[in-house]
Picture 1 (cartoon, each protein chain N blue to C red):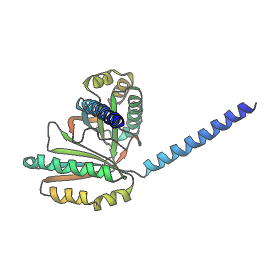
Picture 2: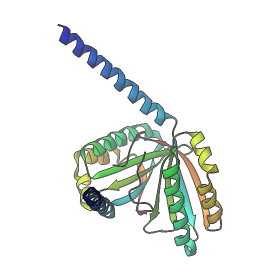
Picture 3: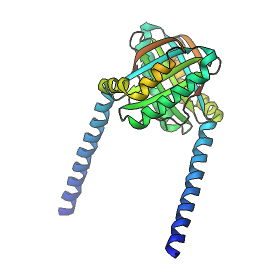
Length: 132
Length: 132
């Protein structure tokens, strides 16, 4: 009887911890800012642009905890068409990112390479989706 | 002297293991198939479409190890514009996905909801990028 009670208590405590952790995770995702950046680059400057973007992305993800991902792709049939899936923890993480020296370096360094830039705010269909 | 040799041997073995693991990781990423699916939905059927896509994505990521991610977003200013960042481990994982019952269910269930579909094969700028 005593063992059964201890088991039930353990199960109850586990479920409490699990609920707290899941709520914490979904609350974190609720505040996330998700965006698609659709960028067209001057194709004569594409390699320079990509090097600057790569450096900016790697630094941002490494040093800014609020930068959840910056997944950038170049289309095989239109390599000068770049799309970035941007996820920030919340709007303040995004604002901090705009002030980061590595972002300012990228932004000023690439301003004459960018032919067009569209920023589309987005809602994720499955918040909390990861890359395995 | 003996302790020093053992330490050097341990260091060497660690570096071998590290090299093998990193090469394995980068080899895995080299074979990945990355794509943007750009889909426009009949807006009168958007909620039904999103429910079917959500179910398909959650099942694919859960049961197919070769589906690395399916990150789908709906644009806030054009909710019927859906973009999916699709990452598969390799082309055979992608082919297997096309045969999966949950994919076939989604594809047949949504065929009259999709106004246009563009599949853009893409190169990731930073292979191995994750979502924190």
